[in-house]
Image 1 (cartoon, chains in turn cyan, blue):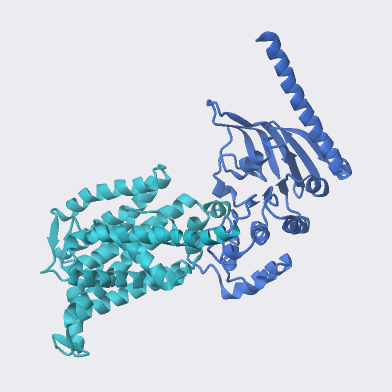
Image 2 (cartoon, chains in turn yellow, brown):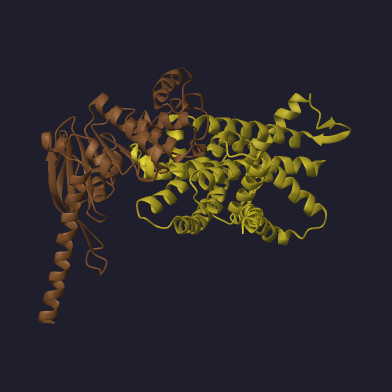
Length: 312
Length: 270
């Protein structure tokens, strides 16, 4: 049960990562590798502030702001200096590795002793349970910390998802979606496409860094290596989410990305429990994304071919 | 309303692929005038339109719209003054967004876009009232993604979007060339209606001699990056398709003459 709850919680926290990747990859069609650096940046900033005794809410938001800056940097490299999008992301990601080490001052910052959103959630949950350390759920015993963090992760994710959905229905948000959908059209309607891309990448990486800040507090440490492969993780979540909701209508896709992230984390937890070597995890994730990206096209081609044969 | 003075544009300058697309074009269009531009392939007619729209910066010359000198303005800034319809019917609309969202984007052409709702429930009636005259039945499908519509329907909507806020200048770049004849007729009818109704200053590039003869109050013929004929007033009204074809034949013959003359010279001197 603890395993299941842990998977759920991490899945919900990382759904912020999935939402960020959804913004950059699906809305702007921009494969943004800044992700790997900005999730760590969010964690580093939050961890360092928490160790200094800054309030967890402020530390978490500060982590998110770090991601906003990182995303804006990638956007500016891409739009103002006309560097290929993939390369712009790689440059910022590489630079962030050093920056993250500088922020933390070392490669790993433990948060066991610090007051974090996780410890606050635990305290709140304990108080809500009338002082009990465990909560019986369907015969299982759930720790107050696990329950508290799960509820917190759910609330944060739901709030961010709703805000994102509402944002993309505003004038600015629709202009952003149109930028990714048809840049020529939106330019002819008076929108500075470069600014939209910078803003969009800032938003995406802000969400991703927020995920990093929360993840560090949940797992109890920030580590300079924690971002490796995270963009692929986010892609996998978005793709699973799209398969789950089976539509491109963006309100549902946002919900799908959250569900995809949770489901993916559950699948990983089950696979690891069943004896999968953790070293193979990233290989399998990459292979999964590869298959998910090419499969729809291949299936469509297979379906077309018999029809063409009949025609001939 | 539009004043183009001495604009020049060379693409791929200094390479074997150098194209002198515009070689000193002067043009002055009065407010409310509907100008049709024709010319052979490579005559520079679309390049002229794109130069005015700001797709690229011109090498020389100035472009003024109304009291604004827009020569140095980027494309998105000029959009405040210009409504555009492209040749490709898929270029003017965002396919994954609904009809209502596309119209809402057009309703803020050139304006600040903040955090107000893009599509307000209260605006739906106004939208339906403006979509209904298109005669396509789209007023009941405002929540459908535009990508599900045909090219003709999308082009009609693009025209509506370009003129949603009255533009100082309307640019139409062979906007019916990629449509089937029936849709093309429909879009041309809508074009004529809106241009005449709102007295829009319009610059329309076309391949169709029939459109060139029947539409507009002025006709410009381009060749080799220059304006070679300019008909307006009674002269424009008298022009028939046959006259235009005759002018094209003239151009073609002079082109052949040039080539054979060049060939003759080559034989003599090389």
